[in-house]
Structures are given as C-alpha cells and as structure tokens.
Length: 596
Image 1 (cartoon, rainbow, N blue to C red):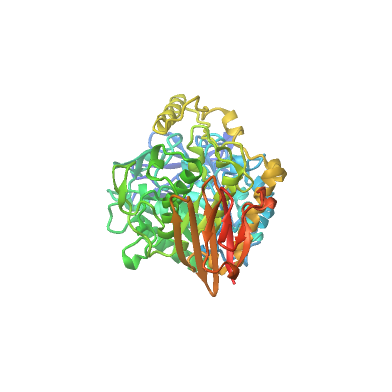
Image 2 (image 1 turned 90 degrees about the vertical axis):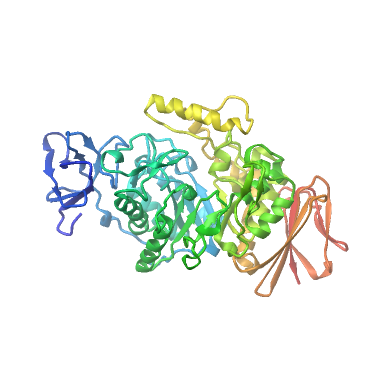
C-alpha cells in the first residue's frame, strides 16, 4: 500500500501481452488495466481499496490467477490474493537484536502438529515452556501457502503468503513477536529449490523454472537461463521479505545443495550478501543455515575463500553415526556407518564421509571440513526428515530403550556443534511423525502414495504405509503434551533441561570456542570427548555397549562428576561413578566430568 492509502499493483508477466487486475467480488468488483513498463513488468495504482480486499490478475485470455507475490491467500492455493497492510501490526520487539550462531539451541517444530490448535497462536502457549527448557531458537517448518490444511510445507506454492489455516500473516507476526518477548529467535524453513505441484501458477506468468535443471521434486528454478534475473530477484526479495516484514532472525534453506545455478555468481552467495546488508540496515543479527547432504564446506566458507558465506549448515553424518550406534540399523544410507568409530569421527572432524569411499553411494563422497569452526555445523539425533521419512514415522523413543535415549541426548547436547531438537524429543514423544498431505488432485494423491512406497523399498521396511492423504495420518502425528509430565517422559525432560543449563553455563560447551580431543575404542564400544576453553576443561564419556566400561583417567581425584545419564533422577540406576581407576560408565550411558 502507498502512503496515501492507494494500492499499487506490480507483476512480472513477460508471457502476457496485457494484464488487468480484477478487484473485489460480486457486484462491487472492478477491473484495472495495468500498464506495461518494460522488462515484462506491468503496474498500476488504484484508490479506495481497503486492506482485506481480494483480487486476481487477469491474463490475456481472461483467466484469473493469484498474485505471484500474494501476502495472503485466505481461500487456499486456488483462491484469490488478499490485500494486506503490513504496517498495521503493532510490534513490541523493538529491543530485540537477534541471536548469534554459537548461542543457538534450535527447536524444530511443525505448526500443524505441535499443538491441538495447529496454528501459530497454538505455538505461543508453549513458548515459556521451551524457554525454560533451554531452547534459544524455534525453527519453523515451511509456512508458505500449500494445498489444503495438512502438509509438511514443502509443497508450498505461494512463497510470500503465510499459511492461511495456520493463522495467515498476522498470526505469524504474533508468533514472532511473542517469541522475541520470551528471548527466542525465529528461524524459518524456506524452500528455494522447487515449488509444489498443486496450485503452481508461476509458469503462466514467466519462465520461472528450468528445462535443464531438475530436482527430485520436479523442475528446478531458472537461476541461470534466459530471463533469470527476475527469477533470482523473486527469491532474493522473498528472503528479505521474511526478515523485514516478519522480523524473523534466520532462514533454513531447504536442500540448498539441490539449487543448481551455473552462473558466475551463485544464487546462494548473492543471497548471503543481500541478507547481510539487510541485517545491517535493520540493526539485527540474522543467520542463514543451509540444509545440505553434499558434505561440502563450500556453503559455509567465507566468500573471500571461494565459499558462499552462509552462517551454518546441517550435517547429517552426526545423526547417521549416532542413530546406527544406538539402533544397529544398517539399511540404505546407514550402510556407511557402524560401530563407534563414525561417532568419534563425527565429533572430531565434522563429517564422516569427508572424501572417503561411501559403500552406499559406491564412490568417494564429501570433503574435509576440520578447519571450519564447529559453530558452523547444526547437528541432531532426530529431525522431521529422519523421523518422517521412515515408513512408520517412528521416533527414536520407540526404537531404543530409555537408557539409549538418554545417551543420545547427552551426545547431542555435549557435542561441540549447534544442537537441533525435534519437537517432542525432549520428553520422548512416542506418537509418530508421518508424512501427510491434503491435495485436491486425485492423480497427484495417487502419485504421492506410490512415490512413498518406492522410497521405502531400499530401506526394506515392510507392512502397510500410512496413507499420506488420510486425516488420521495427520492427527496421529500430533504431540501428546500430557506425556511430558509422566514417568520416564518427565525424567527425560529433566535430563534435557539439566544438559542445556550446563551447556549455557560452561564456556567449554560453547560451539566454536573449545579445543576438542576425541578418543574411542571399537572393542570397548566407548567414546571420550575432552573440551577445553577459557580455563575450563570438561571430559564426557559415552558407553554404547551393553556392559559396564571404565574409562581410564590420568588422575581421577582431580576430576569432579557433573552429570550422569544413569542418575535415578533421569530414570537410570545410579551405577556410573568416579572410581580410582577412572570413570565407570553403566551400559548405554554418558557422564560429564570437570577438571579441577
């Protein structure tokens, strides 16, 4: 909206000879022809159009299509766009300045299944709980308008419109504002590698997608072909839009390694530069985190060293190493891991596959990254992909016994990296997190069903795959918060709280600052981790075996026990302790010591 209350409509539509705006509905609807202003742009202004008015763009043959940069799509992906006045929201976070990467403890959540309400407002009710747990940032799975009301968010097709069934743009603003009021940063998961198939009208406006670059999910964006400048601008402006109009503190870039761009200036490097400039202008810290399965440190190396200059990246190797050590699974990509050596290597060297031969891929994979600071890596033992892309959506809590669950928690929160928790992990939620959609196209629904079955084949998972389209699949994936107050669930939550409190208090547990030394014994099935920083020295021991192990210490009397996952407070038996020979670890347990 313009300062005088008028509304300016601008659209890039090089495929059209003329474009009109159809404003309003029913008898009060009117049409405004737009003027061509060169470069495929059409624009025009109109007065007397209040916020809340719906509109369409009418293309050459009269077909009505939603605005490619709609701020709100209240009727879904096939409905009209709605005019929004972004200045009408009254923010209360004027003193908020963001969160630096080493201070991040990330909590990933899916808005639709996090609360009974399944809305942005439903998340707000739990913010104090998360803050008290020790979380410092929420990572919210994609919210760009997607078909129906049940979706992970990676089928979004209206990148500028917060999901209508979650609460729309003002609902998301309320959530971000409330997060900042609780001292929590907000990282938004954005999808710049593809667009969903249903309700994707962008190809009717311009050459947004490439015939040369394809992804696992369809055509990739046209980032390096003819007329790609405006396509790049569309994505870059989207990133700045979330930072500016919604005050988000960071973006998680979905499958960034699948964004194919052969330009001299890669889109990710351009994105990093644009975000840094906007963050400076806003006076806030903003982080860009790449999801990447490439094991390539180029994403986070500085631009001066030929990298893209992003702030951090996910590293799946940590998850895979820990998962296999805890569960013994070896199917699919888990074939590259086994025993405790990969756990030790992940702790010490960032990547396990860092140029070595990968049996799963049958080729060398990855590149060394030991010179990159540890606070540039985000690690987890569960996330939406690793849980939801199992046939049954099983969480770690139903795959391993409670002792192993506590051991995994200690590995995550004592590792020298940035930790990410998946919603419900902190209390051992047992409800699955399944893949769900609510498409309206019958052929697409069947294609999704068949595609999921093919994906699961290589993992050897048998049995009936829950129907992604069924509402019961979605409903069964909701968190059951009452469990967090019960028995071992409550005790596990206490462990997470104590581990996070320790992490925030100890300089040696701050990512990027400590000197790290790792030892392991494959036969003994243990790993030890020594962390030194700012005059503080901590030793963590991890026993993956089913029998007790003793880790030798040079001078046991000079160490003090800080925490043990075998403590009865957390559901253990209290068998781990310091003895004259060193640190005695109960089966499937971890302990933390301080050097006196």
